[in-house]
Length: 95
Image (cartoon, rainbow, N blue to C red):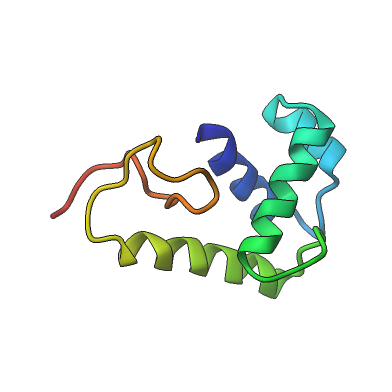
C-alpha cells in the first residue's frame, strides 16, 4: 500500500508527466510494475492513457479522497486491492 501512496504522490506532484521508468526508480519497483500502477490509476479516473494533465492529477486525488469518505467502515489492508483502497487507510480514526 505504501508504494501505491508514494506513486500517487509522485504522479500528482511531478511537473508535467512522469515516465514509468522514473517512477520505478523512485519507488523501488520494476518498470513493468510502475507502468501497471500508472495504468490502474489512470483507469480509476476513466482514462486510457498514463499521461496525466494537471486537471487529471486533481481528479485522481479528488476521487481517491471521495472514495475514502464514502466508506462506511474502516478499510482493511487486504479488503480491496489498490488503487480502490483509500489514500487515508491506516491513518488515525476520527469516528
